[in-house]
Image (cartoon, rainbow, N blue to C red; front, side):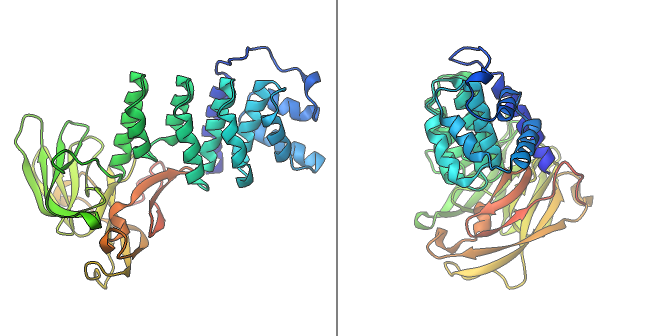
Length: 391
């Protein structure tokens, strides 16, 4: 997994090193570099996995921790911007938590390469220090350079749809707005909250143009909860009711389209169902809640409570669920869902009225893995979609 991750990072590093520089393109001068000449060679070369290996070898030879020197290089305005940018990238790859504070001021540097490198470095802090890293990335989304803002979008990806929606409202570039909107759709497809319409309804549109709409019949605003009707509308058609007992917490509607838009999985009356939109055939997968599409596959996951049942409404409790994987396609003869793990959820009366955190869980991509996460829910690493079906 480490090599796969580094390979992706290497592409990003190369893109940064080739970016336009505000201060000119003259190569760095080794004679003006006040540190080890071997470190100059590392920082002056095209960055990537080889640079990491060279830095490790240099440390082994000198028996010095060079991270502090990298920080000094990154902060030194007298040094060539390319050396400084590559130092920032290597700091990010090592991501010592104590050095996150170094990156904030670098977002104000005049040279675009340094700002781009800082954004790339922040990506490596997201798994362990998400809040401060996202705060700095939000700042970078106001950078005057479209190239920097584009790199921030690549780094933020689908992690924060609220930030992306705010960005869309002020971004002048139609191209970047389109990218941000695509990322918002990805976030919503992975479990992020939807934005209520003027009438309080919640809707999402699938890749084939079909629309799912949740209409509140009962609502408990102080608990961030609602129950109501879910309908499906195909282009040019009339709404078809899918469920009358759909439960929604924190504006997360438990209904999602397959990647090709032909199928929809949804929860109604705490059972999971799949509908073939072309044929109107449905199959009932039994007891379960909170379905979520498994990225880059034709499958989805959902959660079945383990024996013991749900607590009374509003009560605090520890709940356990089996995570099950099933296919969108296949009709009534499709294979039965297969277990892929187990999670426990802690409900609290002061959080969404004691609803289970699994209801607002999102699928997060981090470190090359897909994970189901939510506050109050134990983490679940999902099967790698690039390594077979897991069946």
